[in-house]
Structure formats: C-alpha cells, structure tokens
Image 1 (cartoon, helix red, strand yellow):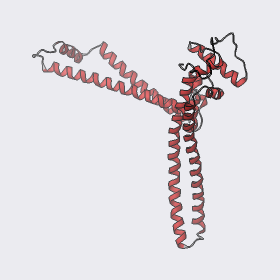
Image 2 (tube, one colour):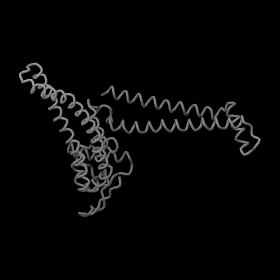
Image 3 (cartoon, one colour):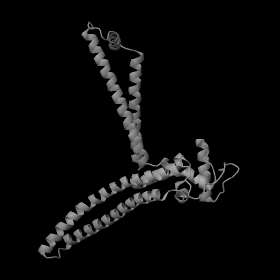
Image 4 (cartoon, one colour):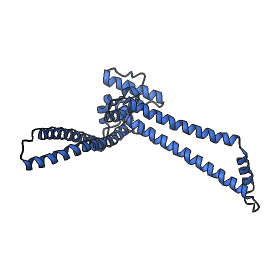
Length: 285
C-alpha cells in the first residue's frame, strides 16, 4: 500500500510539474515576444482594415490557436489534478502513517481522520456524543449507508467461502472419480463454472463495497461539518472563531471524552443560555 501511495504522489508531482512548465512557457512568450508575436500584435492593430495582409491574418490565427491550446491544456491539467487529489484523499488517510494494507481499510480510515485533520476532533471519541445532537433522519441515513457496506462485506465472505468449497470439491472429484459417469460429468462442469465465476463475483463485490464506503464516509464527514457546533452548544461552550482556537477546543473536548481530562471553564467561553429542549441548535460551523 505504501508503494501505491508513492505511485500516486509521483503522478501528482508529474502533473504539477507539467502545469508549471506550461505556465512558464506562456509567461516567457508573453514577456519576450518573438517575431511571430510581433506580427500578431501588428495584425491586431489593423483589425477591421480590409488591406490587412494574409501574413498578418495567418499570424493572428496561429497565435489565437496557440493561446486557446495553452488555455485548454492548462485547464485540463488543473482539472485532472483537482479530481485526482479528491480521489487521493478518499483512497488514503492523512497522515501517511495511518495507511493500512488494503484499499477497504484505507478508505474507512480516510474519513475517520477527516474531523481530526479539519477540526482537531477525534471521530471515535466524539461519535456517540455527536449522535446525541444529530436529527433522527440523519442518523438513519448514516445507518443505511453503513448497512450497505456491511451487506457487501458479508457477501464477500460468503462468496469466498463458496469459492473455497468449490475448489476443494473440484479437486476431490478430479482426484477420486468415485461418481458415476453422468453424475461425474454434471458435477465436474458445475464445479468448474463455480470456480471461475465465484472469484469474479468476489472482486466485483469488493469494488462495489469501495463505492459504498465513499457514500458512508460522505455522511460521516457531513455530520461533523454540520453538528459539531451543536455539540459544543449542548455542552455549554461557544466554538472559538479562529481556526487554531477551534482545533485546540475540539482537541480538549476529545481528550476529555477519551482520557477523562476535564475542560478548563476559564479558558473556553460558555454560552449565555442553554437552548431549551426541542429548540433547534445553531448548526453553522
């Protein structure tokens, strides 16, 4: 898995270097025009003149085509870099020291580390507390997305089990041949088909489970984005306005939950009044 991470990092570096070289080339031509660009400038100055020469028109067309090509290439590289980095953050956790051996585990670890990376909040320690302030409908959506992942994981185990049994049975039938000719032929071909199809089904189910993890992870990340301020309000504190202050606050809350280290009430501002039961808490992060 570390090798895959290194490959992805090198690919992003190559795309970034290509984009930088493209921009440098464009800036160099803009700051130091050559003869073709001089013709382009002269042609631009005579726009609308019916006596403009064909050479000037050719220069205009060539330079406009080059500019369009550079713009499209630059936009294409930036798009690929953006989409690639989004997928990279889905596939691998941050920091790199938390990388696991499988893509399945890395995708789960990636969204588990999201609240720590963004807010300083530990997802495992605060999950049950966060669930107390989430609406029932949102909790059901998270449970349903996780149920899809659990179902696919169970299917993988079942298919792997049937695949192993089919392999063992096929080896037994081929070696012993203790069945009648008709039964042997029927069993033989059924087992061959099962040995070929079941591993493919396992692979496809595994790929589907990775997609289901993305949906589950999006719900988990959204729960921290939307309801962490509501949790702070329910605890009687105001969320600090600065990014660093917010991170320090949620680190302190996580330590209180995990290590039983109480918050210092003198350090963190408290809300003026607790929201009444049934009132809608402030949800903006």
